[in-house]
Amino acid sequence: MPMITAAQMRAARALLGIDQKTLAELSGLSIPTIQRMESSNGDVRGVINSLTRVVAALELAGIELIGDGAASPSGGRGVRLKSSSSKS
Image (cartoon, rainbow, N blue to C red; front, side):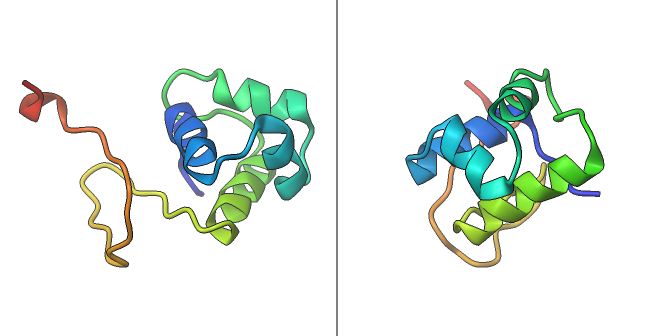
């Protein structure tokens, strides 16, 4: 099951320069569904099929989702939060 946080969804949209309506169109979901997913705390909660569609749409658009502690093997540009122990 793909895991994505609400913050990752918002950041991915920002990197792509798209709004919620465009992400809804790319994923075949409704705007209220995207809004509800993005307003989650932490990991996005919802129907697995919807979550899978959003992740697939973001990946097709060029986004690589990076989990906690995961390497980014493709070497592309990206944004990642520092772990709480390494924040200053």
